[in-house]
Length: 403
Image 1 (cartoon, one colour):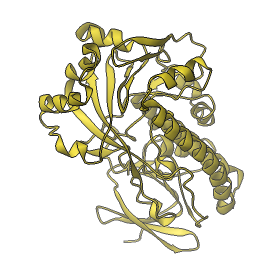
Image 2 (cartoon, helix red, strand yellow; image 1 turned 30 degrees about the vertical axis):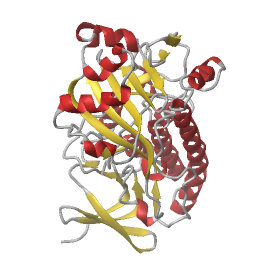
Image 3 (cartoon, rainbow, N blue to C red; image 1 turned 90 degrees about the vertical axis):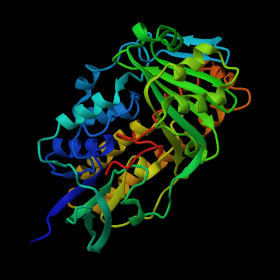
Image 4 (cartoon, helix red, strand yellow; image 1 turned 60 degrees about the vertical axis):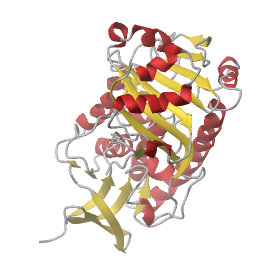
């Protein structure tokens, strides 16, 4: 049987890969998308995303989906509160509707992109195990089920632990020193009124030296919480997350002396806690041009979530790559060179911002630096976006592979 060939193959059906496929589709260019999940509903999609007016929003405009995005924005989601460990409110900024970063549920945004593509574009249950060059810029990609295909252009949109990245770079993500434990409090106003009041209508930063609670209200009225701890990489290995009450106690051991209302964000959580180690590629990660292959999103520039840039960069990477290919018909290498030059510079700035924000959030004098930043007119660091598309299994890193 002959090996299938796809002119453009995108590995990973996350936000970036789907945006690329959609932008190409708008311009009449076909692409095939390969994802390891059995179906679009195989994994939950994380919490809220703030979509930036200088990156994610232009990407959605290029995809012809901006108006549909606005229809699903979460009103009030840009409100921000900053508390100290004693639950004293140091800053309380309402959402007056004038901000440039409207909130949307990650799952809603992904469905918007999925629904914009015709059936058959995405190959579900197609776990990529490796890729190799076969000459003239073409690559052969192997799948876990024993199948394979060839492609003229291979795009790695497959997250932190990308199977495509080794074709262009030896870099691997490194642990940042911060671990998260995620928790959920559904129907918060009715079932968890104290936590609902603490978090407010948007984003909460409750911070102390080396630790904190980061939380946001979701569009369904629930609260999604990240308990963040500066810890050794093996810290999460010592917690039995199959025993939720034991796991809660282990996490809250790091928040002794914190106000009861803040500890309740974990103590009163419902369902299983989800651990995440936060990893990042080196700021300024780049590679020499390799014919017929490139990366986007976390595969190219995984960073900590503390500038709120991950999803937005994936969106604009996908849009920029699609537009570059359209602008250079018949010259894929020129398109990839133009895309990578733009992407490298943007990602380096954002990665540096993310690292600085992380250091500020967990510094000895926190949350003073965050309050000063807001009141001094500095850019909002954005809300954390740990977990790449669908990251949800226990003991995964900052972003799970999406293909």
